[in-house]
Image (cartoon, rainbow, N blue to C red; front, side, top):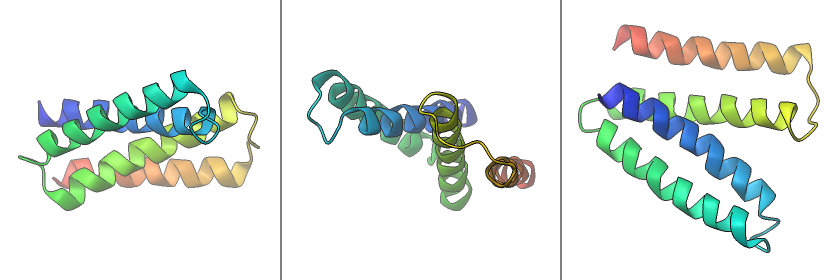
Length: 104
């Protein structure tokens, strides 16, 4: 159960990071509220998962999911450049996250 919560929390990290970008410095209400709610839920889920998953592994997986998700969102929705180097780097992050899960 902790791993499922950790993955959902990592996805919520993508949500809050994306909402933060959309909030335009907290000048837009809805993205600002989405940011706050997703941030609290993401942190609460991480805290729950870290009860049974070692902090180094859990935090790295959480950040990795959030980083890859946010970068993918930026490329797919916000028009950020999609380059071979960026994709390769994201694949390396995913490989590291999977590796951490496998050695856990």
